[in-house]
Length: 491
Ligand code: SF4
Ligand code: SF4
Image (tube, rainbow, N blue to C red; front, side):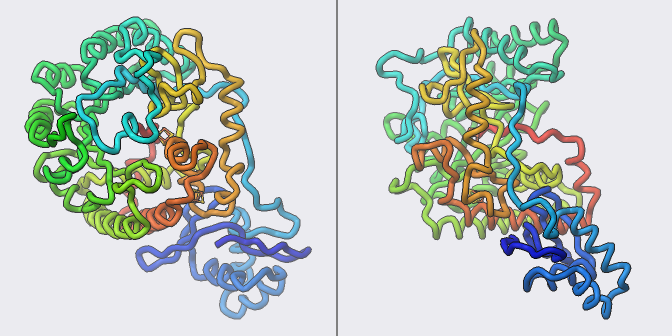
């Protein structure tokens, strides 16, 4: 609900919030502060009364005093005003403040694209698809990152992490393990240099699993490297799009290697990352297969990034189907959480964590701020998906990044510049969505991803309901999010 009516002097009216119910109780999600607020009978009555339009405060107090103690009504109005669910005529106008950092933001995660080559040719892959941004044909980009460039990337990450006591490196590709020798020596180098700099450093990578040899698995387990496997589900789903050059499916090769990895690598949870397409939307079946049959700890799903028109693009009806499947899995997650059992649906865990932290996002992700991507030649881009693109380069690992360019990026990409988003209740979580998706879809990173608003709002509403249920019925479960950093996602 968004108050758009202008208020006369002495009147109070609704400001921005989104109502939902959970555990038999009414809640509001307060948009400016990204806070969840449980309503008692009196605050619910105040909001209901103002839903018909702004009122004079004394008139409202008088009306409600028939049902509630007048002092309670007054203090409830004051509290709702304090949390910015209500506004007064003399209050600040409801707008999205544009606050741009005045100095460089410490880098949390550097995504190092150690190769732009891949041994698979997944039909929808952004590396090979319509939004291909790495041009290896004319030799501008080396196919593999050299050891010297990888070391420069580590120096860059340690330097740009500034006062942060830790740095995180994620290796990405192409298929990351095609450059395993450089990856391996870089981890050794990075550990030495981080120790000299007095910082902690940790590592993760994304792979399609087909190159997981026993020695690679041993190394990843020994070095406690976090691993995310790109896999789309059971054999017939995986083999629809995740194919080798000759069109053969990759499941038969990947599955035994994944099982070997999961059996040996127990120092960190191993997650699966699924790309959903129009043809592979059976979320529950994919989840069951990846957790129960292959043994993944967590599974995250992302709709395919594509310009419209591709036959694998998810249609509007497909998003409705997706939402209903996500809701079913979220209900399973809730059941498990109420019994303090693990459930590996990572999309809901991540959104609950964001709701719990209550940050109203001005930017959809950390790209260009706490997260940057490095291409094989050492150019630094907004994120890994832009690595190799001339248009989104911020600098190089050797010479550093331009703070002026970062500031210009922050200025033009702030959520307050996205007109449709400034009146959307889901903006604290979405903030316009992925820049790379917008670039693929509309050709501009500054555009909000308006093609999936209904999906985002529907899913955020469900997450709020689950959050409210847990807040009422098992609040201890939510405490696990108290100290957790909201990690920069790499997808
Ligand atoms: S992209 Fe859509 S859902 Fe996301 S904040 Fe903007 S208007 Fe809301
Ligand atoms: S959400 Fe999009 S722009 Fe942001 S880091 Fe991920 S891929 Fe890059």
